[in-house]
Image 1 (cartoon, rainbow, N blue to C red):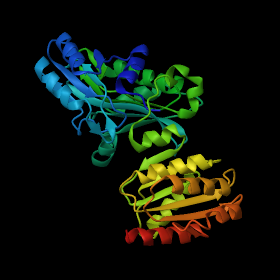
Image 2 (image 1 turned 90 degrees about the vertical axis):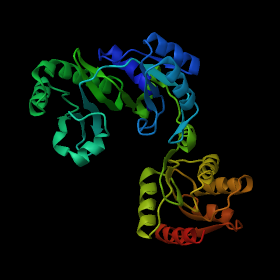
Image 3 (image 1 turned 180 degrees about the horizontal axis):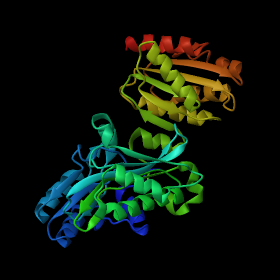
Length: 376
């Protein structure tokens, strides 16, 4: 679960991290009023649950109330990566001397947590890693023991941080680590972390909470906002969906199955349009909704449904397909592979559905769907 910037900053404040003064606005009049309270100069920041706001025009400095009104009018209702801007965070202007990067994240490869610091903030950390990897400093944190003071002292020394900022940086790093642990987050990020004459201040804030831990954090669950677009629709239905840039829709039960299916499509020379995992035990209704999501993507020219029935019953999947084809306007070819629990029953249900092609193996299905996609 991702939090909006203003929500993340509210949490930062509770943990003693300095943030600029700000107010959340939902109308042009509110934006104008808040900018006036800041003396006519402020930063307008679109509140969306996607990255790249700055490059998409979602962060603007304004120097008058009139200018703020004009920009707010342009921002509200605008879409950034499928996310409609409905809120603007109006924040005071801060005189910043330098911009740094600081985060704590889950490192699945190392089976640990990682604290990452860079003196080159304000840009994507991936960009820093690509262009200037020597400016990225990491601390590997063993979950059993936590973050030690000596690790932070070694980091500020290696990164050549000015000595008068050591205490401030170490305090901020400890605070975001506490947030990471206590809120059971997957990521807590400050980018940029501004260096001012009065010390460090979090100019931006990003917190991603582990969905599986939300039942222990009811206060966070109330903050949940589903993203807009197909990702949000899938999330509401309990499915995992990621939009990609290909033209072959993929529906599978289980993340591993979905990734294996995508790999086979790539091997056959095709490109997946998405990753859609309907999970174990998927019902007929979920199967129908999965197809409904894919048919809304205009880039999809063919669909490969790859189901291995364990907990998921193939006959339930087939019923969902039957219902989907009866209620939806599906104009693209659909290739289906059913294997496992109630496989024969599922195939029998689909045998009279002439608009799909049933295959026996994943490899056969990948080859067939790439072939038919080329003719669309």
